[in-house]
Image (cartoon, rainbow, N blue to C red; front, side):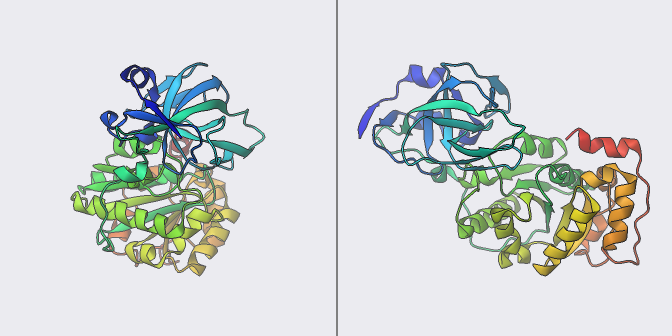
Length: 369
């Protein structure tokens, strides 16, 4: 193993990724090169070799910086799971690999969706270390967690798959509670590090926005279940300590994804939650998801998501499940707020039938997310 100086010029020229935002720049003092085995969360300096699907890097402030061959970037090693993009795994050596997420995740592509091009190729130049040569890892900069189960009202938002409308649903709930005068936390509990969903929830009224990168993880793919559970509960607890009245927690990907199931099957997370709002693309997905969640012991409060772009899909889902279905506009208007604050005891029963009223304006909200 060889250690070389990490000069101020190298740091100044490198484009820094969103995933590394919690690490103070003045802690980055040297590089570890040679035979080093990267770990999840290690910071890495890498050179861009060939531009692929990700031609921009999301910076800590949310701006997306254009990348060119020869650019250097500061990113984090992490695994990636995205059915409509890439699956990627950290290599055992610092061999040439890929930028697999715009938020700044470095790993080696295993497979991809056939609509995706090749990922952007990068060459790691070294692990970033402090003045004494100790590697810097995101886990060292996580917010402090407590062991207590959070006490603030918490609503989970889950879905059938990627792009089912989960983020719009979560942001709409944030907006409704903020408009009602509550201090709201918007939390992304699993997924791949990126700032877009956090900025969106902040724009919709969240006073505190957090995700797993605040818990020291660049992504949650292949992370141990106990670590994910601790991180999710810790983020909710931190929001409570910051004075939030309610937490809206989005769980990424679909119910068949390993880490999503880890979160939703956790007894402690179920204990912390008042219920789930489930986003789906169609009626059959809504029905199957509802049955799965009930098997896991969840109280499903309502359905929403991409299916609400179609009045016919709304009718199908309501008929198939007996559940109320709400568009994003209706959620933002506060249709769910009173039920959630009453622990969801009145929602989801046939005595509260869904009124079928969806305008084109309502439906278009999802296409903008």
